[in-house]
Image 1 (cartoon, helix red, strand yellow):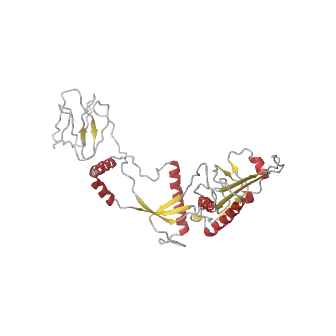
Image 2 (cartoon, rainbow, N blue to C red):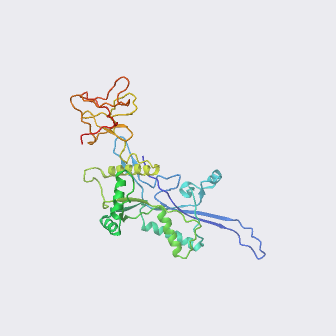
Image 3 (tube, rainbow, N blue to C red):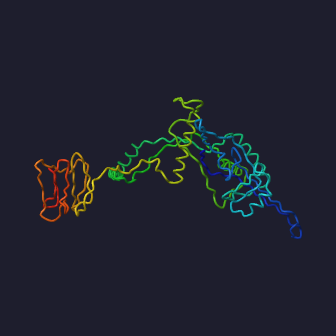
Length: 370
């Protein structure tokens, strides 16, 4: 069973009412009344301790194909306590709390002060939360966008007319051919296809309702807002039963969710090995050679021996179609006057399939016929 986790948000209201002072300036002996309420949108009783019920789940059995389960009916859940993760009196508070179906008792990672309001505004807020569920009957944690690449011909013409555009494009293309990431990211045209209706959308809508009735929102720190976006280049279509390839739609949805979960995990772990092509070179058997001062390694091709020599008198192997050494059938040898030789003390030689032998010339270079 695989799930995708998203960050959730709830609207918390805290009231600490104390007795008003009398005419003598003394505090009345009145029992302090603390009220803590959280309003949360979700299909079930959510929270950090129950973080799987609001997302699609892939169920796999032995005898049946995988299928997707998802309870996405939108509901407003009310909890009468706000509990932080660093609270040390968890045992004492759990004894005073009601069952989880009524109270919730969830632990929240952080809290942000937004505004102060009166009791009348609080009543309006409760009514607006119920209206939100009536207009958004489905819990939708994803926002779906269409992403279509924009044409780049106009951009290239503008760069050429601006001056120096051809030089810049040449350097960019050259850097890209050498493996560098100098090209600008491609531009896309985005269009909203399916609007999300998550817990964060609910909280943002409640802030809008508070501002509409005259409550001044003055947060000390602005809370971070998140949106889970899915991009597609195809149009949204409703399917049921079997698709065009005569495959069960529920199995196809489960397969898509499994791939989405793997993609999500790769983004979270910054590990894209399963998605990017491998750049490792193919391994080929290389014959072992004795130690030499002029050559450290050599690749032998069955068809022809191709050797290139640079300015440092290093002999390397190449499989391209340039710098080829032609070897005659008469076993001609090119010897060196010095002591630098390709052969070792045991008179080992670099031979090809025709027993041809190649040594350095007087200038320590091997030239081709061209």
